[in-house]
Image (tube, rainbow, N blue to C red):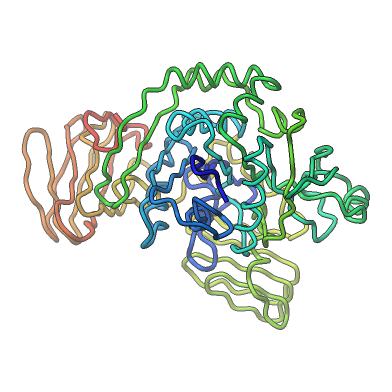
Length: 501
């Protein structure tokens, strides 16, 4: 059971591009936000898993803390998506005291965790226990996960840096390994960390029985983490301290389309960019003599490739699997994922077909790890599909590109009730808005007026304008853009309720 003054604070790391899961995972909506077959995102599942832990006793003893706390470290562009996912994950339980630490650019896990530790120490005290969870992992066995957390908490209260070792089920070459040593009261000391092995080494680790897959999940006190960083990674510790000193946390702000209030803190870009780009394993865990491992058999997967995704789906008699709508004729060992249309295969074997509205991936499962090479090539070619989907989430709702060509683009906008686009202007394009459903409050220049279904308005290039939904249902608008330059960076914002000015 936790000490009376200790609080368990989950720290969710919601970053990473997930390039091996292209075309579903992209820079604008990466792996933590991709929906699995049950319709829930990996981030949603991580929030639910973290909030299900009893803050006084993860194993289930004792009483729940009336003020649950949670920290999310993510890119500032993902803040509103993360906040929406958290609001949907809270359910009927008490609303957590949520904080979002917003990065301008990712600097790996050591800087992210160091800043989270500073925030936790400042807000909850130096003895606060941090449970660091990547947002893109899947854990199937919640009771065993809670038990592993309870064991880790017991070690962390004794000032150990605890990592979770996944009991290996096969000689996997895609994971790093942890070699365990002398037993502790609830776990073992870590003898060493080893890199991704060859097939022969992986089999030897499996046969030895004291090696675990490195999960990238941790538990430790905020104070101990910062002290150990100062000892073993002074450059990370010093820059983290400087970065924290420059932060002026904002107070909680309400979200018009979410019942969740949250504290959002922008990490100073220059100070954070100066931090070493290094993982917590490399910076600290491989060097400290205070590292322990808790063995975990929790149905864990890092969903690192399309092979991992298809393994989540029950096969048919021919070992075919499908997410969405698919038809298999004389096909075996084939996986289909299709978002909004039927995909059929005839006479194929050992194939993966991943279909999205604007990109199609066809691959052999043996080469699933090489999908990230497609993303690298798209980046080199400046192709937008490495970054954005046809449907793009915004804090006010979303837009979908219906069609585009030279000097024109047609979008479908969905604006949530009470939400508003920024007060903005464009240098190079004009826009024509047609209201499909709902009520729109439109400002063009100094004039404001209400529009309803089948009504429209025109905004010329250079005109100040804003679109708002004052109603109780979604506002749907067709936007026709015309001009010589139609990229999304042709926006000058003057006012914005989401802090994007």
